[in-house]
Image (cartoon, rainbow, N blue to C red):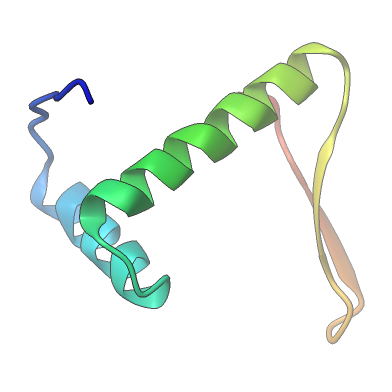
Length: 67
């Protein structure tokens, strides 16, 4: 598996740690999942799709603007 070295700001590193903890996984796996999600969203938005976050409990929908 290829390796990469990345420098993060303190805030970004804390976010990666938080996501990994929430997903009960490693920081590396959290980053792989984030990259996969970003790749999917970018591809879908490029084809004209919209990304909508819906919260049924609050009866709200939010559109994520194109990246």
